[in-house]
Length: 496
Ligand SMILES: Cc1cc2nc3c(=O)[nH]c(=O)nc-3n(C[C@H](O)[C@H](O)[C@H](O)COP(=O)(O)OP(=O)(O)OC[C@H]3O[C@@H](n4cnc5c(N)ncnc54)[C@H](O)[C@@H]3O)c2cc1C
Image (cartoon, rainbow, N blue to C red):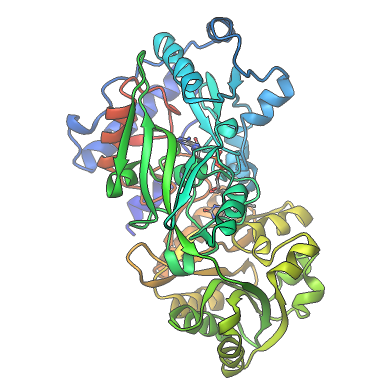
């Protein structure tokens, strides 16, 4: 990663005075030249109403009075926010941002009527599932309407290993319905109790199950999407296969997802296990061996450095040690081989229980993995924050990072397959927040060991990912949101 690219990982200037926005535009223009982007990639229209105010939104509300509008100010504030506060930098940048109104469509027809009014009045629209995103993805930068999709939550069909659901369908409800038919989701985040399918595709990655199936946007995990265009006469357009991917992780900037068809996996009987190891390196080697082992049926393997246990209040007794540990989900058939693999890496299985037993405790093991780990730490000590990264050579890179940064940075990695199928790790290391400069230095430290950092302290689509503009995302915006009303300010490729 070049020094220049690293220095682009800054919080975008707050939209505020004209001078600020203008100087940012000039800066973005310069970056466009550096990236060799011509006018073809630029947004066609940025004519959304920068003066959206209560009266224009009130006019929409009056013309659609029978819809489910959120009345209470405190609820509008709540539904304007997500888990951006995991980052002290995002907290500072986004605390004062909120929607002018929130509406909850119940049907496609209601959704279309809202979209048409917004198009007529050029009112910004921010889509929302459950609002569990971490990067201010569903926080409107410029007011306007938040469209909360939680009432468009139907499960349309589950058959032949595929499910079609409305975008606001909760993953928890989908899992229960799929289980009843002998299937389960291929991957879901640790926030599965609240998160929606539209929100996972629009803003998430995956999580439990990604050790087998990669991210939700790996080919053939999502089979088709229906997208509503933003115009005075909204249309629904169906996308198939790889064409869907332009809307993945685009923060709802380039299309309104109405429903999705996803591929499912056959249901397994799962067991949760905690194993401890005498060194972090041994734990990582165990994780790599488990991830690569084709015969052991597993769904989750998170590796945690020493120091995390005291923050995992409900698990402390079960983890039973302050040494490095692994949290795994293993099918019945894999138990013997799993135990042998732990032993071969000098580890101890401290706990093994069926998923039903876990459910009776009220929390699953995977609710202590992924970004839930960060949340449990933050709950006890709000001076912490985190980073996100991908390791492509997990054992080697994790050792180098641990040797250099432990204990100031507490290492936490989740084994996954990447979109091409190779074993990799998603990293969610936790660290004390000192300053923006310290975060930038730690990003540089991770990058110096070859980690690909997805900066969780910025709110632009590109800045939090590859830092490159994705022409497919911009082309989708031109196709589905020509007026530029969706989540304005988040897609750099359109702003230029
Ligand atoms: C404690 C914690 C743990 C987490 N663990 C994980 C994890 O394991 N894996 C992971 O991937 N993420 C994780 N996340 C992030 C987040 O929970 C997931 O990505 C989740 O899937 C988001 O779903 P949501 O319904 O809450 O989406 P929201 O936060 O509501 O939306 C996410 C983005 O999608 C857009 N969007 C929502 N609906 C639509 C739609 N219909 N059309 C177009 N765009 C839409 C929104 O505008 C927003 O930009 C975690 C977050 C927290 C706080």
